[in-house]
Image 1 (cartoon, rainbow, N blue to C red):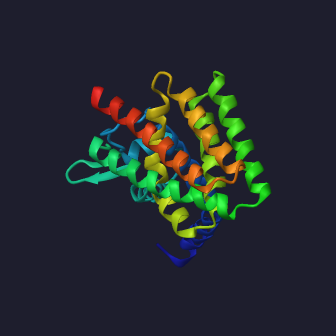
Image 2: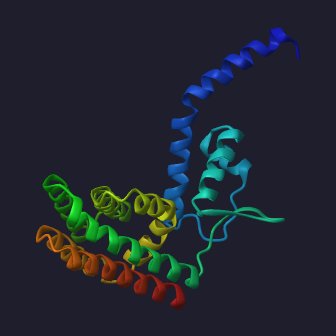
Length: 232
């Protein structure tokens, strides 16, 4: 290839660079949501060629997305098989829930100790959105987004950056398990009742009660998810 022929490619590379990040994020979000909603099942192969055809993006973008999802634990690279949707074993799920219970209990306590009155109001508003989605017939993804907003507020208000970083590293796998838990009969209303306890403890500025409510909520969700995993 001559230098003259290479110029348009260089220009195209620069143009793609400017839009690559948002495109990559869109594709990653689509795949992430498909995994959370179980449209892509655990163990299912993700073939680059098929993903390129379905999304219309470049091979480079697909590979970047798959690396991102691998880092999040949503997909895994299996020798002689390629990239597959990760499977979470009951033991691994139990470990994740126990870690979450400890971390979120600490976050609940520190939210009471450190959060502003405005952040307390934000937590109440986030909870009200959860209750509304849980009572209606909206998509599961809307309820999951409302719960994410609640936990974002809780973690930010705790002022503990280390907890935030650890929980963010677990977030994708937690979302898959959360979707499984909330899909079980009667779990959504029980989850709302448990989260109401968290908010009321926070509003009362009772740090120990908030810590206990946060940890209890996670462990109850864990029992539901593990029951679903072992009975399926």
